Each structure stands twice: as C-alpha cells, then as structure tokens.
Length: 342
Image 1 (cartoon, rainbow, N blue to C red):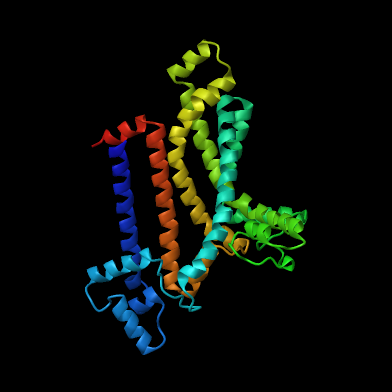
Image 2 (cartoon, rainbow, N blue to C red):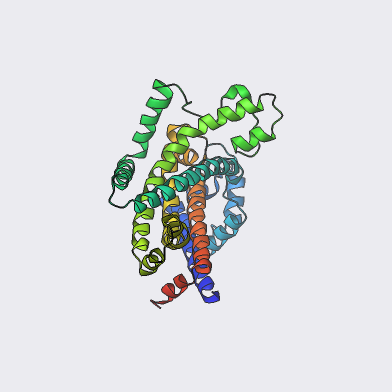
C-alpha cells in the first residue's frame, strides 16, 4: 500500500506541476503585458515597478515561475482587471456558490444512475431494461443547453411551477455570508426563514436537474454494463446455485465489485460537470464560478481566468487522487493491476 500511495502522490504532484506550467504560460499567450496579465496591476508607474520587482519579472523565466508558485501557494492571484478587487477574495464566494450546485447535482446523479443501472442489469434484455437503456441514450444525447431550454419552457413558462434564474427571490433580503444560499438562510434571523428556504430550493431545481442529467445517464450506462459483467462471473453463479436471493446477490456480491470499476469513472463525470457548469450557470443566471469565468473571458480579465482554470482542474486532480487512494485501500487487487505494467 505504501508503494501504491507514493506512486499516486507522485503522479498527482506531477500533474499539478504541469497544470501550473500551463497556467503560468498563459501570461505570454494572452495579448498585452505579461505582468499586467498576471497581477492585474496597470495603473501607476510606482505600483507597476513594485509589482515588477516583487514578481521577479526582471529575472529569468525559471525564477519567474518559482515566484509564481510562491504567490499561488499563498492564494495571491493578483487583482481583477475589471474591478480591481483581489481575485482570491472574490473567488471564495463564487466557488462556494458553485460547490453547492455541483454537490447537489452530483448526489442526484449518483442516486439516479446507480440504482437504475443495477435495476436495468437485473432485468437484462427484458422490456424494463430496454426502456431504461433507451431513456438513458436519449438523455445522454440531448445537449445541456437545449435541455435547459426545454425544462424552462415546461416547468417555468407553461406550468409556472418553478422560477428560472437566480438563487432566491431578492425580496427576502438574505445577506450573503458563506455563498451558499441554503446555509445563509439557516444562519439568518429573518422571520420568513421557512418561506425563503422553500423559495431557494425551488430555484435550485432546474439548475440541478440540468447539470445532473448527463452525468446520471452516463453513470447509469456504466453501472448497467459493469453489473451485467459481474453477474456473469463464476462466483456469482455459484452463489446463485447455493440458493442466495437475487437481492442478496446484487447488493452483497455484485455491488462492491461494480463500484471497483465505477469509482474511477466518477472523476470523469465530475470533470464533465465542471465543463457543463459554465453553460448551466450562464443560462440560469447562477452567480457561481462558471458564470464568473465566462464573464472574465468576455472582459479579458486574465487573472480570474487563470485562477478559475487552475482551481477547477486542481479539484478534479484532488478528487482523482482520493478515488485512487480509496480504491487501493478498499480493493487491494487494483494495486497489483497498477504494478503490472512496471
């Protein structure tokens, strides 16, 4: 396990190093002055010269890169070119807003994908399996932006059940403390707390459904295929011959082995959600990191672009590392598979 853990950590830090090199190189790929692109300092010659010296831009590229690493480890991403605010201070709120949306969507995708995938495998080649698989293929093929428009037309325009944009009706006047609208409501002393919470949950429905649709359908297909493969293994057939019920076969024998192959796909699904996050937040006017990134791209606010890209990609790398460590601990056979090619 020690060797496996050290190998995983080595590849994690190597990927993180490559990511930092890519984001550092963006300073020269963006149009304009590289120092301004990195720090946001552009007004005043004295401030510019001080930043030039503090960020080692008058030295070699290697020294500049080392200085860049020193700044980002201190969460110093410079100043926004559009607002002049510290990028990391603004990012804290935007990231929490997106985290609330992503975590709820990811949980919904798991709750839909895993049970339906196992249900379809349990009724392999039956009508129920065909119906679930067809529905999954249909949901998988619908673009996120089109699904969002369909849900808005149906639930907001035609039926008028759900709100379209924002986190909460501004009439409730809930102060933003943490960035999470649900936590902020629970922390507030508003006399309309229950009504505000209900309104916030209604605002979450459409973005969560849209963001979780593609991951849930993908997870459903993966779970179904892996469950079908596991149910055909000799040890499962032997357990069935001993008289074990189908429910016990699925949850005690099949599910743990299915998760062994499904867990690595969670990182890919999470990355897919990060990509769709920009679209979903823009459509539903959700004030998160995805919408903030899109606005920064339009306004050419390079420090924000660097910070958001590095943070989101870094989160994916961290999640992948945690999944690999858990798999190595929970399923020792995976450690041997890793060493097979060495």
